[in-house]
Amino acid sequence: MKITFLGTGTSQGIPVITCNCIVCRSTDHKDKRLRVSILLETADKTMVIDSGPDFRYQMLRAGVKDLDAILYTHEHKDHVAGLDDIRPFNYLLKKNIDIYATERVQQALKKEFSYIFSDVRYPGLPQIDMHTIDGDVFNIGETPIIPLEIMHYRLPILGFRIGEFTYITDAKTISDETVAKVRGTKILVVNALQKEEHISHFTLDEAIAFAAKIGAETTYLTHISHNMGLHESVEKDLPPNIKLAYDGLTLYSE
Image (cartoon, rainbow, N blue to C red; front, side):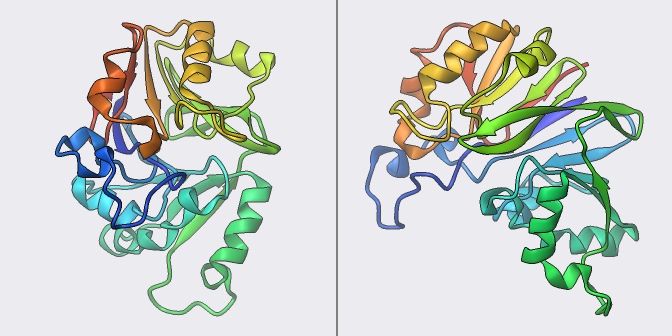
């Protein structure tokens, strides 16, 4: 499976356009982070986890020519706002896009994008097929997907394990039951918002502690705010098997 980080940033802590902080002034492309999203290409399917406000540009930037499915971790705007931009894929590929989400997230999408679900089918609307994630393992094509329950402060959200790869974002609390499902992962992706304490996201130290608990061969940190600091200076202080992800980073997993 080919894994491409479409975005590794967050709306949390994003400064105004006139900000003059060291991250915003950085010329290192690894410090230029769009909202968090990831592209997974298996032998028979192309899927994205979350479609935030930057979705259209992310897909153009990555040169994505096909899309079969979007999986949603939760309903917050920075993870769902780009759903409307599947329309070019509907038009060019002449197919519906499969959407995988919990019942609660589906209700949020129906409220946010009511026109997509209207009985009156206006020409050119996004064309989707909705699938409910109920906690059980499900398949997208030939690939089994294990949903992982995560707590984003008091909001239950999802991570996903796919083979030897696990993707978790917006986590603050992870149960022992979920930890057991993640163990054995070779590539772990987990959120690390900033160094300072935060009510609903892992800090850098919390993400490092979780990575140590899982023991993956390599852990990549994502959902990074500009408060974290410069990519180069942060990464040099990380344990050898933990790295900061960056937009455009490509990995491969079984």
